[in-house]
Image 1 (cartoon, rainbow, N blue to C red):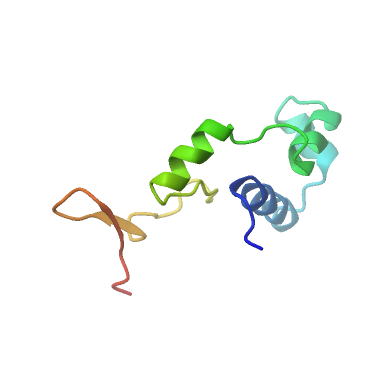
Image 2: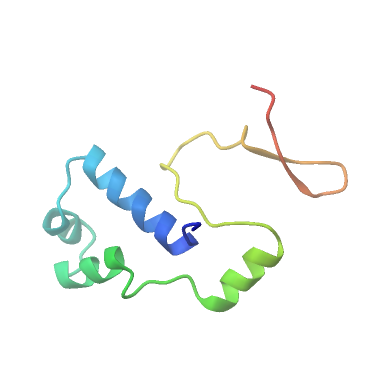
Length: 91
């Protein structure tokens, strides 16, 4: 079963928390959020990508992803002459 966009984003956030050695309490304080609300976000009980956006992304063959700020994403995708998004696999 493929993970949904929501699951992928949540998992990426959880992995980044581990990398940065951040627990839920500390992260919640840093973003001025209650720990309870952060737990809801991380568990998927709130903060879902709206269904209407999910339908649009699915139709266009796109997905929402979380990447580290400042990451060089310019090599991931490029627009071809017809303005369609193509994977840049020149590596």
